Length: 301
Image (cartoon, rainbow, N blue to C red; front, side, top):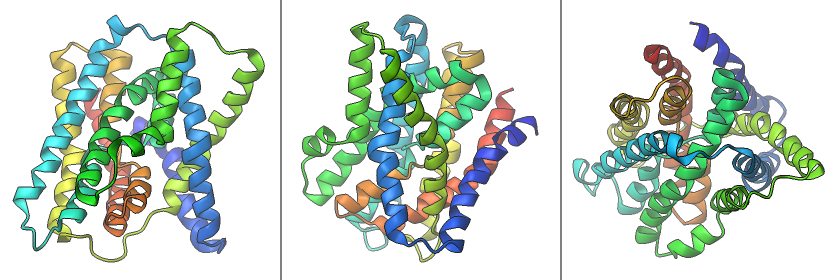
């Protein structure tokens, strides 16, 4: 109950975003602009700021990174199984490629908010490390599958992905030991502060459960089950196998239990995929995670 109450303000921001879209009638152009601002400016700034400042003690953090990587790979394998579980007539090739990413992609906006509630600055740094390590992995898998079925270049998409670029820049800056000058640090800090609140509002504004996802509700239920149940379960087992505890255990499990990233819809749209089905899965996983995420974290304790 305590964890659910701690996360309630962040979930209320998501619901507020959904309500504001319907109440204020600002139009799709406003919300599309907000999503682009968060995706291309605010969130890369938050990611770079967290990685540039983080204490990247790879020897002690290696089990955490390994746990999250293996749990993501489990999601990819189980998500890929949908290609054989559901017939092509029900789940088309491009619809599968689009929805496949929903089995393992993670909503970093919610992740940073949860990490801050659980462990404050240390939690944000650990989540930044995990996010930075996983962004290339999940983007290669997501973009690669869509590129394979959509006929676009994987490397071109990765080279201009703001999350990948911010991750690499933050890691290189940190490894070079440059430090952040005070004015730059304050500037990035302001952007990072705006990123979480506006990011959660943008998540809420994108909630859409109208229509029927490609492949039907059975296929959608499979992807949701993988992301919200199988991936956290895998992370729980792997974390215990590696002996994770405290901060790193909480972050590994919270990361695995996150709903699907809103950027999955942007990627599907930009690459000619089934954006409507991805939007449905993002919405369903976000709403369901309001129940499952606190349950996983409570169970772990």
